Image (cartoon, rainbow, N blue to C red; front, side, top):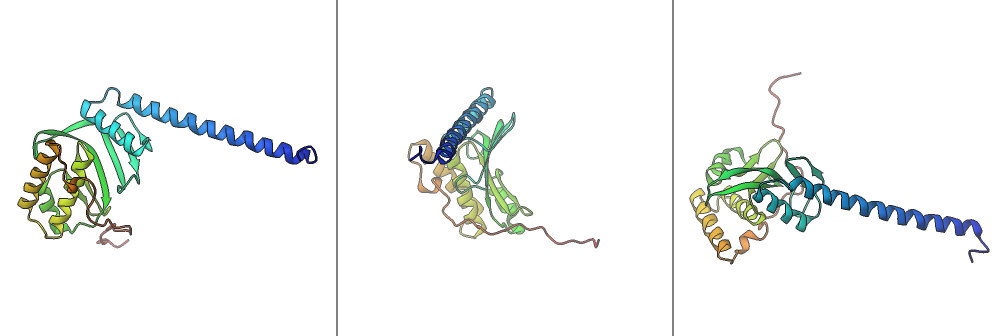
Length: 204
């Protein structure tokens, strides 16, 4: 067939060569990204390094990297996941280092910001962005914090009840029996725009 259509033959062969070249380029880029992320985290604190390795293993290579950050966007249920190359001390429910921040769309009523801060200082609500984030050292702890934050927002648990359940759940995790509340978000995350740009008070 190719002998009867030399032009077609050359086009097909050229296409095959191009596909092979693109595939090789994509593989090379993936290897470069992997090497870059591994190089970045090499000198990070141990907690940051472990969190980064866990996220790479689960979600693949990050979309953005700096010397102190790895960032994934739209990974799993998250708007973004950030691993920090530095640690923040946090003593609730026991001393640990906050290095892993994960964000969802969520319109938190402003009058509940204080309740969230009293529940867990590493649960962060942003009214303008319409986002709610949790920051800890492991993803399961972020699932736990956001599930309980949702309970507080919905009025299903008091701050004290949420803190007590958080502590109990972490004890179960440490005993090797992580409860279901640490495995995923147990509420529906909004897909629509929940940003809140507020109202202008100065006329232009």
